[in-house]
Length: 457
Image 1: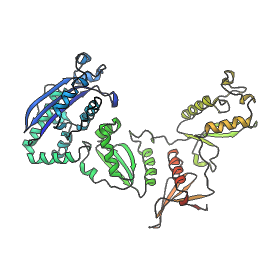
Image 2: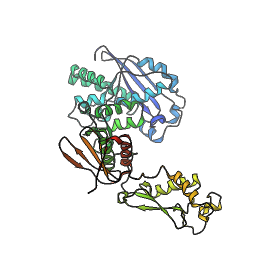
Image 3: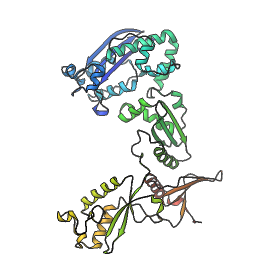
Image 4: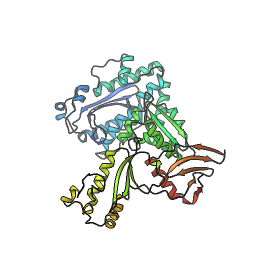
């Protein structure tokens, strides 16, 4: 292992994520020239009870940590113990992220060189499928008396590295160490070469789990740079850490331009339904809020379930939702805030005055007390942000997305992409989508000089 000092670290936590995650036990074994020269171990009081399932896994109870020191009590001693050592752990980003956050809370910057025994196992034992510490212990017949306790797990890691050096040679270990020190933020289960081979061009990337199922779909003008940024952020952002530890492969689809990557990302999220894309992962059904004017001149609304693309005029579409309940919730909230009539909003079937009028929460449009002009003006102000903009052109348009590529759009719906260099046209799915609408609207507003009208045939 050379003359550099290594510290083999294992932590047990309370199972919480992000700011709720706390270390409840830590062990550190300092090694130089392959020999153990010092050890450190301590239970840590997380400031809260230990969950039952953590006790079942580790054997650590709330009573065990009640009299233990808090992390700030041991922070400086632990920091000095590990300072200057290569930090070794199984799934190293996990242990490092917890300690980095705990040290940061007491104004200590913790940024050691990192070495991951999972990465080492994948690189030097590619013939094996499983690389969990449990499987490694079983496979190499490593003796341990208390699994899921910090010291025993840290000692098992040390013994595993010694076995690896003895069987694979010191040079193989040293080469893997050098590679890891160059790529310390990369995930433990993804081959470094996959990430190094990612293009630096626009497109969409897909993180996959060990079964090939999609975890996350993203887009960027530089796929390689953005993917690496995810892993760099993993030590400080809980969602990124979760994705890093679960990722086993990364695939990608290149696009010619950024706007094409935006559109493809929205489509792929809805197609693949990846676990970690919550913002764009919406149902394909559409529930529309449609405005009408009744015989008395008041604006009224109905909820209709069909594709907004059927409308040639979007002027009366006041919101597109994925469920009737979300549409009603939105209208109810706006109605309360602006004292609009729930009867006219289509939320109450009353024949006379609405129920809120009796409570003084409606200004009387349902009784004819508030004039149609005044009420309708308040409706427009209240629902302005929900409203789908009317298509501002009398025909289809094309808008340049690069020097030789043009996006064809009609009624906010992308129709296709024309490539002038190859004189080819690629059709796109002709469905209205709220996320795509926002992308297209923003792009059109920013690129008006690049727009050309296309007469409808």
